[in-house]
Amino acid sequence: MHSDHISGPLVSRAARVLQGSASVPGDKSISHRALMLGALAIGETEIHGLLEGEDVLRTAAAMQLLGGQCERGRDGVWRVRGPGVGGLSEPDDVLDLGNAGTGARLLMGLVTPYDFTTFITGDRSLRARPMARVAEPLSLMGARVISRSGGRPPLAIVGTSETMPITYKLPVASAQVKSAILLAGLNTMGTTTVIEPEPTRDHTELMLKGFGAELAIEETSHGRAISLQGQPELTGRKIVVPGDPSSAAFPLVAAAIVPGSDILLSNVGLNRHRIGLIETLLEMGADISVVNQREVAGETVGDIRVRHTTLKGVVVPQARVPSMIDEFPILSVAAAFAEGETVMQGLSELRVKESDRLAAMSRGLVSCGVKLTEGKDSLVVAGNGKPPEGGASIAVNLDHRIGMAFLVMGAASRKPVTIDEAGPIATSFPGFVPLMNGLGLSIGPAADRTG
Image (tube, rainbow, N blue to C red):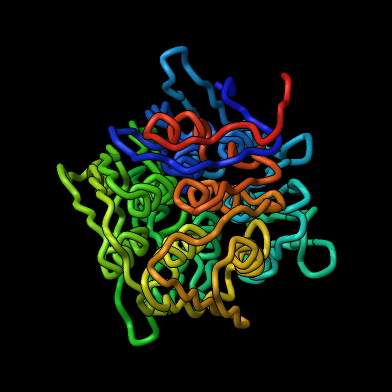
């Protein structure tokens, strides 16, 4: 399962051309939610195509500690059983979510409506991430959340079975905060409502419905209102996890910037709240087409064909930001190869991701010879239509998406690009290097390393 776990420095050299087809690993958002709801619901849930990255495996381990059963069959199918809504039990150890911000934030909600205390921690990167925006609504429902300064983990969630249903307007659009409140509403009497100012990914809603929860969605003058009836009977089901669009982003952009490339990425999730990158690349003039589009368990899935073409700079509409928040590192690489300025605004969320992604991308791009302007919550990349210099060594700082973005850059920049640590890539994209090299990239160890 982890045979491809790579670590240490990697270097990406010029790729001749990308060809062929590939399937990217399962969607991370959907994998986390499938394990949580499957390990809560009564009966067996069968999960096909689960992302077996480090983050998701941490969620599986956490659900086991809460009383669920999660087993991976020899056939690669995960079989998960739960005690039913209201049936979770106090974990006898700390839940260590590693690098999984999604896992940590959603679990905070899931354990809120129970008479027990849950301790949550993670790796250095997760322990630096603010959890206060999740803690606030959960406190209104009746939980006590105790954290380090700045709302950072490790944290304790002192739950209660007498949670109050709330109507909560999200101050900032966030699928993780929305999902945490809805999951807390599962074991809460009455109706829990979340109002989001801008639509965010709706995997939680789609999956709750699939497991048998009663959800109503209404467009109001304040935004989209999602209401959940508490204490539903959730029953196990079969889930097929589509390929992760945030992972597909890397081979997709690689093919768009390496001349002569033509690739097909199969079975990619195309949820309308997740395809901002594809919409933006199309506006930049990219040659992308979706074939064989279909519906699988409420999620839109399709195969994506990408061919190299010249790109031009664009202004990314701010309303699109939530649908591509994880794709800005790789978009800024595409922008570096485009002709003209690409303007990205409303990016304050990137300052509190796995790392300060905005600062990390700016530093890395500048060291590769890219002209840009970094603002408080904006990035303007000025491309001249020619490949940037490259030749830099990038400090990944525990952030998988920064690492993958710069390995893609090295495939088309004038000089190779090196990243200092490949380890974090396994959190979201196990098998990244063999998959990319199979399409035509040239990624390898940066030094003569043994072992």
